[in-house]
Image (tube, rainbow over all chains, first blue to last red; front, side):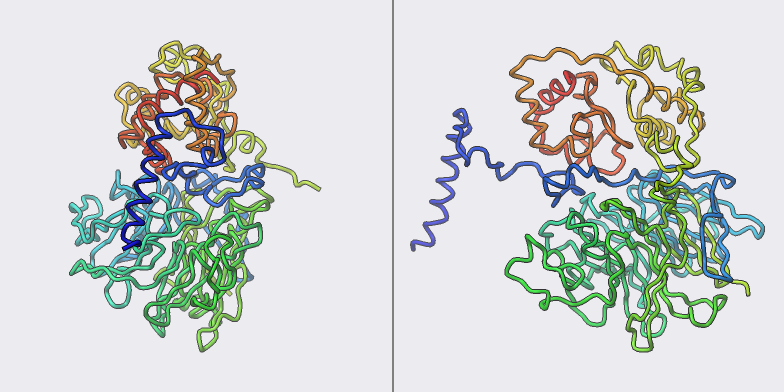
Length: 413
Length: 190
């Protein structure tokens, strides 16, 4: 009985206190100075920032909204291992991010800020950038299968059927799945088509470091024919890149670690989904080994599944793909390439690369190294890689959402 | 030991793009049609229209892009920007960035105190900078017109004002109408 009474009594007491507080000038007591329960929270990027970190004046970089003209793109700055060559594949695609190939070498590209979706058509000696959709809301995710283009906006997934034949006059999109969360923070989607015909995408944590709702900090999949949603993995702060192993068909994904712990931790991570109901630790444990100083209390990292690799702190590991082409040397087969968008929450910038991950026969990570570098010159960046995609000819394409361009990495002996 | 900075101008303008080769002198000429509303040298005398003097250049550039590309709707602005080239926008932005902002307006002490408390509770300075001078693509609020600040905040709260990344629409949700007018009055007086 006492328990049943205790809660209403406590509520009544709180209510009386609120009324009293509202009607009186606040007395100068510590309780009155504490923030009210409903006090607004800082912008999502600043959550978890400590007072002594404010002076560093770190905040996210401006979004890329424009595109450099092809002749302005300093592609010669991009350095690759011997035998590899980097060229501009297409220019004039503002905020080009996630990529998916359609038929006949047509590349579909999503954007996070302008609300455009591009179809980049291969004309042999040059590429034509067609804007096939405008005015969309955070149309970051693109996937393609059997003539249908899927686009993930902030809170819904759309499809354009028979798209290849209608690039100049795309059909009205149909809704595949609606009613995803509308949080802006980590709300834009990376999406890819699984070998099982389901669309895979993330619902990121709605802030830097927060206790996420049950729906968030997850990898999910939707059956595009039935509109059924399933959770694939939990405890994932924000994944903006995923792909399926070409042999095992297991899902692998990148994850962005939390901010405001320090310059060198936690690491961004690479993950392998080898079982159902895996939980990779957010917000309790980061990189499989670092308990969160707030949410980690009462937990150990042993409760959670471990990442396959640590990728470096704040590198912003976004798009990743397995290399399935045959143009590169044999040792690159089934390697993972990762687009590292580059840091903001670090006193010295890091990332701004394409990195290479080598797995052994059992899927264990045996090497993680830079592959393409040069977007960062000193402490200044002129572009930011956002996604990678293996082209039909076995070259590797790289989207850049700040230069508004697609680069092509080719190999010639 | 510091490296040479080939993109010094880009840095000065707060964006790390080599293509940002803006010409503030050319921008002065290109901004002549803007003066009717935004005032001579970007200090507007009509509180409906924002003062642009001293705004971070990336803010003005990105808003011009948003008007031209249809993401921010405004019938007055559209005819001026419909055919404007990116280069012209950068020049205009560089010109306004180099102008001195106008004075803040008067505010009653009681309203100022209330507005200051709204700011502290909502962390406006996290993005707009502690002195509200703006940074990168984020606007200066200090000394901006009260009417324009109120209109903007109401727009963000009702999700009718274009928002680059959703930050302001989220930030405006907890604000009451009194919060909006208080904080706008306090910022306009900075």
